[in-house]
Length: 430
Image (cartoon, rainbow, N blue to C red; front, side, top):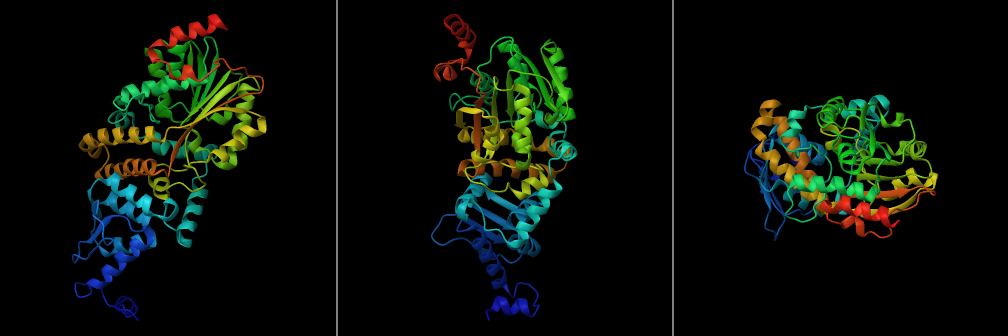
């Protein structure tokens, strides 16, 4: 029997006389996450470990034995909670360190134990996106206060992946470009009626009405976001063309030409995809068209349990195949699919940069634990998109009776400032 096993079996206390125990525990961490180029340091007695022959990207300092043991039982939850508590510190680039872990894990993640599978299933049941559950899940994330999001989002509070026409574009420029990119993909025409499922703080709906001459009915169950969007519509004199409804998108009623969903699908259970498909078909029939913009995966897998537990309850990132269960039963044809994964990584990098600059205000608004948890959430998301664990898909679709307005994809890439003139040219030649 090895010395660590003997110490554990005989209940010998972990102390400075047994540094081999901590080193053995550190070895188990690397067995769980793979040979990530990191240096783990146990502060209690200075025990440390890193894979041989590598230059560590960062040093992960573990403050106590309880945290060290937790990392072996459940690396993801234990690391997230300990980092938020300050029991784990990362000296170096946090996003880079997490990316290294993603890339060293087999198939992009650690092998799950029975305990991890059990807690994941229990969490999914507790956070089910029923009508009541969705409202609770959304409230816990989006209703934290607009002042919080104003500290690190762009000026329009767009909380979804931006689109960077050039790598030098600012966050404001990239978010505005994203709004227009979606409108061009939808081929919006003046006078059309658009329904938006999950509208955030209202930026897309207002952009559609202002620049494309459409009327928009937008649904959202975040009270804070709806109040903000309504006030903005009134101030910008667009309230006669944009209606913000505080209700679940499953209750959408009425007939529309276009369906838009940007960053909402992640909050729908896969089991409810058939129901969502019926809502879309009820709204736009066989002659309408639409877009689904969502965080997804290239392979089926559960979303981060720590993020679901502490940040984003009820979240799931579907595969393209799973999303087709929304469209195929109603014979919707996919007209365009694009993956904007690098754009989301860059968006998150800019969010984290602004978030870090606002750290003192955020800690005063909430507490240091909240600030550290959200910093980990943003850094971990950067790592996931960089490593390819997460994707950002845009799917355009249309009914069997919908005729395309654009003959080629060229209009998608026209300069935004020429959009109005180009649309007039389309009408003149059609």
